[in-house]
Image (cartoon, rainbow, N blue to C red; front, side, top):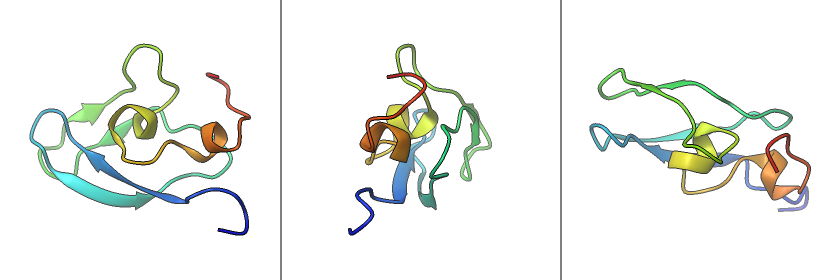
Length: 71
């Protein structure tokens, strides 16, 4: 991509295995996410800045760009 990051990620719920492809916020980390399958409230794993870094197939844009609050 010309802007240097992938804007979407497929999250996989660790509780039910539901997969959902979503657009990520480009200027912030997303700390909470409601699973669209079972309704579980997902939070980042210890050491991760957001749910996309913990459960997504693509890390969040701030991490991709090297300018993240957690990194």
